[in-house]
Length: 399
Ligand code: SF4
Image (cartoon, rainbow, N blue to C red; front, top):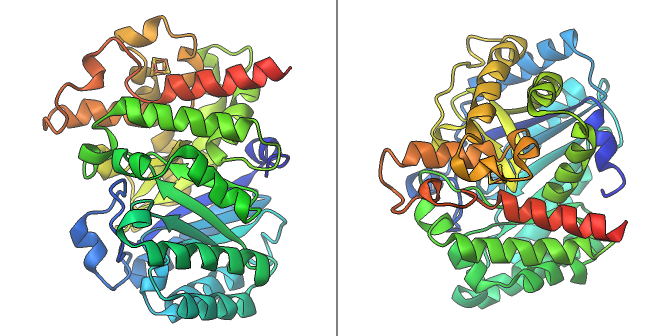
């Protein structure tokens, strides 16, 4: 992953995140879904919407050239539904795009929370491996909830055993992620999380800090705890040549590509390609731009945005043409805070997806969800400054 990332950011890989399942037996405090969403046992995206989306992707490919494709199915536990759901969806995507977009870095990834018994999970993994098509390989994104370390220790141990056996015995690709919240940070130290990946020789480990209107009471209630956690975790990864995380790779690649450009030049050159290659389709079929700060951050209603384009009425091409102007406005507005004026990362920050955190604070202050909003304090309103300081200092010190 470390060696591929720069290449990925410069090249034409189409990454489409699809919010098709919200059901989940888990209770991560940092999750974007509501309790009501999670209770369902049905896909959140209607079949007809999924079929239109596949047609829209094909249409999009007829007017754009992409080297490879990454389909990422989120947010809930896909294995909470019948296994036939993910199998048939995967087969459909491979049939439509397997020949055109077969490539080393094409992938079809789906989220799973691993609440089923070990034996069931292992037999699902074996079944999925048997239908795996190397043109667009299948991969599991296992979302771990650190609160289970204390709440359900035997489940936690089974989850870890499954990850180890899936990756190391079965040879089926699995990535590990967690949703960072104040409770999760208190339940598991950065080193303990880092060790999960080291123990199983995983090449990558993912952390999502995605405060939303639903979960702010858990994700934003103590920013210092979150900052300290992410700083220590980032330092561990930067000092390890074999393990990385996508938020670090994205920052380093983007810094290289923005070198020497001011904010407006950067916006002009980079926003349209970024929006064009990274899209998020929500359960209702809304077409949203997607960014990667620490975790996936689309312009989703749960962060306070109103969608303007839907696959029922618009092609992806039409949506991208309209969306990138909205994105540029939102990015430019995000660093107009007093605290940003003297920040050395201001220009870079504007173009790196962290504006979604600031927009959420602006929006949520209307609802008074968060008392003493960091927007009105003399500090970075989110974890951006700590992440940028840590990544760039460690990297520059090494050179
Ligand atoms: S890192 Fe924080 S303080 Fe610096 S420009 Fe970005 S939002 Fe503002």
